[in-house]
Structures are given as structure tokens and as C-alpha cells.
Length: 251
Ligand code: SAM
Image (cartoon, rainbow, N blue to C red; front, side, top):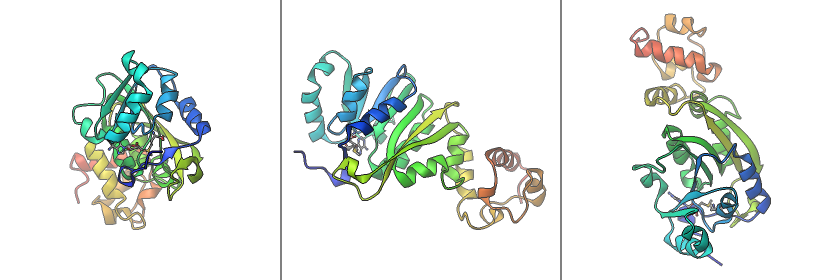
């Protein structure tokens, strides 16, 4: 048995029903498929049954195991294994064609990986497992926040199902969930992303505590000096951002 490495967030899926449910959740597999962190290869095998893929794994020991397990698929050109840190590999691109990510993400890097995928215009769909809290954030399950609004600005996110700790070996400390993000726009505006982050910096405080906007600009979107960021819809944030950027909103 392989010893799981904590530093790489190795919690291997040990429940085949969850693997099948992840595969069923992908819209269609006509895109190129990229798996981040194939681990021991259970999800990889299920994806391979539907189509070709590239899999990026940081751990060289696991790459050796995967090479043996999938020797035939690699020879047939159905699976491309890459031994790299996915975030580093992104600097030159994960794919040259439109692609979807299917993965059981390492928790320590889940938010960063999802954000990187949202920013990559070639990435069109994301079906990933992450810790429940991160999944809920991107879907706005407990109310709007900067990440849920960012996703809404370029597509939609859905929390598909929760996954109990017992579905993994070793069991993680936290619960997990699978989310699906479908992009309708290729990428987000970095300035708007930073603006949302600022607007939600102290979410319990008034919006004007976090960003500078004159009362007339707030009124134009139906807000006032007592409004909190969580009370505004995406369209209101977009109008506010445009107003501030064009100079009409500078306090
Ligand atoms: N897909 C397997 C499964 O479902 O059982 C493993 C999932 S495990 C939660 C996360 C995997 O991501 C591990 O195999 C780990 O080594 C790999 N990993 C961690 N950080 C990574 C990174 N930055 N780039 C690529 N792979 C990474």
C-alpha cells in the first residue's frame, strides 16, 4: 500500500460510487480532458473509459505507479501523464485546445487551482471535488461572496453533492463536495475580481467601509451608505465597478 503524503494533500477516493457520480456530472466529454492530481488512478480509469485525457501529478512516486497501471493506454496515446505541479504547468498552458478539468483536488491548493481555471480562457468546464467550505464559497451556498460573484460574472456554479470523510483513504479532517462550474465567458476581468475582493474585505461592515463610492453612485444602483456587499446583486456590482473605473465614482 502506498503511504499517502500529507504535504501533497493525498486523500485517495476509495468509493467507486463517488467516482461514477463525478463522471456522470460532466456535461459532455467532447472537450479535451485534464485531470489534476490523478493519485493512484481510480478517477483516471473511469475517465479513460469515456475518452482520452492528460493527467498532471506532482508526486513522482505516484507517476511511477500510474505508468505501470496505464502502460497500455499510454502506449495507445489515450493517456498523457505529466509529472509536474499543475500551477507551474499552467504558466505554459495545460492544453492547446478548449478543455474541461475533472479532478479530486488537493485541498491545500483547491481555491488557487479553481481560480486559475476560471482565468484560463481555454478551460470551459470544471467538475471537481474540494473541501465543503470551498465548494460552498464558489457556489454562494451561504450567501453571495467575492468568489461566487466572480463565477457568476463568467458562468454558473452548482454544488452537486457532498462526500463524507469515510469515502477517502486516509480520511481527511473535513467534509468534501463536488462542484460543477460551466463557463459562458472565457475569462474574468482581473480588475473586477480585485474590486469584489475589496468590496467583501469586511463583509459584516457597510460597503462604503470597504470601497470608496459617492452616494450618487450608490443611489444609481439602488444602494445607500448602509448597504452591505452581500445585499447587492452581480449586475449592481458591475455597474458600480464601471462607474468607479470611469471616474464618476471617485470619492
Ligand atoms: N485523484 C486521486 C483520487 O481521487 O483518489 C487523488 C486525489 S488527492 C485528493 C490529490 C492529488 O493531487 C494527489 O495525488 C496529489 O499528489 C496531487 N497533487 C497535489 N498537489 C498537486 C499539484 N500542485 N499539481 C498536481 N498534482 C498535485
